[in-house]
Structure formats: C-alpha cells, structure tokens
Image (tube, rainbow over all chains, first blue to last red; front, side, top):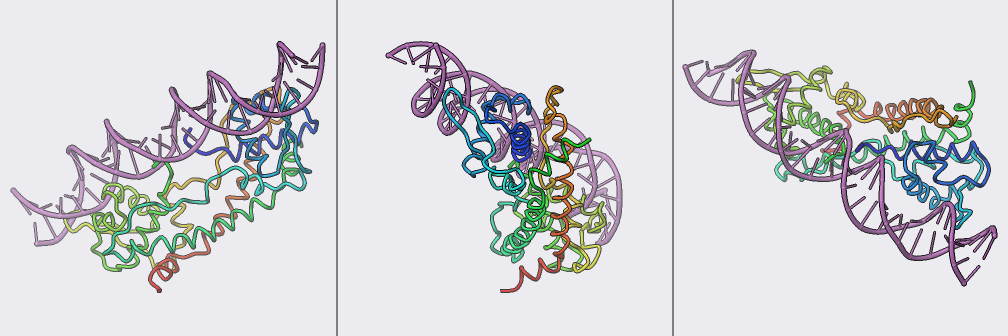
Length: 139
Length: 139
DNA sequence: TTGTTCTGTTACTAATATAATCACAGTTAT
DNA sequence: ATAACTGTGATTATATTAGTAACAGAACAA
C-alpha cells in the first residue's frame, strides 16, 4: 500500500467497461474483476464520471458504462480524471536564507518538472483505451 | 512524508556541488542547504557515488564533488542513480481466473507503462545539471 | 406504497513507503 | 593518538494510500 495505483485501477475499470459494452455493469462486477471492494471502485468511478468519461445510473437498476467510444478516450484522459501523482515531486523543505542554492533550486526544479510532465503526458496521450483492449484480447 | 522526493533532493545536492565547485563540501554543508540531516544526505550521496556522478573522500578531510562537468550530467542520469518511482505503478491484485480483463490487463498496462516511461525519461534527458544551475543563478 | 438494490459519499481503520534520527565502524589527514 | 569525515545499519515517526463499513438518496418493481 501507500503507493498510488489509482491510475492503473482506473484503466482496469475502463477496460472492463469497454470489454463488456452493455449497460448493466455494477461496481460489484468491476470490484470482482479488480479484486477489491465495490466501495473503492465506486470512489474511482465517481472521479471518472465527473470527468465525463463514464455515465452512471443510480437506483435499483444502477449501473455504469462508457460515456464515449473507447477509441476517443486516451490514457491521458484517465490520468487527468483520477488525481494521479506527477512525474516527480519536489521536496518541501524550508529555504535557508543564507544559501543561494536553497533559495533558488525550487524554481529550477519546477521548470524541469513542467517539461518532464509534458513529455510524460504526451506519452500517455498516444495510447487509447481501445488500444489497451486490443492489447488485452489479442493472443 | 511518504512521498518520494529523493530525486528532487538529489538534484538539489548535485546543484549545490556544481555551484560550489571546490572539493571541500561535506554532507553537513549540503544538509544545511537542503534542510535535512547529514545522514540522509549521505545516503543519497552514496547512490550518486555508485552511479559515478560524484566522487567522495573518507577520513578527516572527507568531502564530495562532481565526478564530471555539470554540462555532461543530465537529469536522467540523476533519476537513474536514485531509485525514483516510475511514471505510474501497476496495481498488484491477484488475477481472477474467470475474468479475461483481470487476467490480461497487466500485460497491456506494462506496455503502456514502458512507452510512458520512455517519454518521461526523454524529457529528463533534455535538461542538464548545468541548465539547472543556470536557471537557478540567473535573475 | 413498500421493499429492493444500486450509486455517491463520509468516516474510520490498517498497511506500508518514506523520511528522520541515532549510532557506530571504518578511514584518513593532522 | 586524535579528530572529523564517510558509509551503513537499525529503529522510529509520519503521511499517504488502500480497505472497509455504513448510510442517505435514487429509481425501479411488486
């Protein structure tokens, strides 16, 4: 635990929804596939729903399904929907006033992080959910 | 705590070493700049040393310094030296034999991770330590 | 209308990765 | 010999995360 796997679980969930393209998939169904609790699945599902990637129905015949075609959903969309960690995180130590390095390093690190983050997101944008499903089913 | 910031601390340390280009910098000097304990600095320094990015001297006049010119050290070198986390991490749930998604999703996720990781590393490779120092000192 | 079964959300607990700290053996200048 | 550093092991503290339970609200069916 204590390592954020929500992105990969979210992809798992989305792949499940893409795979069974009906409209009667419940959080319990997905939880069984992922091997976790329905409650946890619902929490992630809620984020995906807020981001407009899935639609849900409450009530007795409650269910969830993809809001759009898997071809039009990228891994970046999913990454943005769940609050996945950045490419790297900058330490939060207080600046030592007497030290120029200490006072200015964060600015430089932030610039580097922005660049790295962009590169990573471009990589995520290249793969669609449909591609994931295809990789999954073939062979 | 509980979020891995070793990469950013390592960059801070390396920037410090690049900034004061003498050969009498100690872990205590660096610890003051970063605002942490010398012990923690030394542990990161040890990794950087094993990776051939810094050289150290033990004994009374113990110290550390860059092993090569800052222009020839990239952020990727530093990223590889400390064991920084991957672009994202794949969940470790057991496969549900009856579910095709559950059984095959990891393969697809690993492929996506490899691609994303490469993109991110390419981004890191673009920035040199010298660039960081330059960003830090100007203005 | 009443009961059932789902989502959405809150509150809480447990697990674990990480930083922080302490301690000390080994090394080398003075 | 002494002092002062690195390198490393052991331990503790803390923050983040997953996991779980519980329940209000919603919608459908009888």
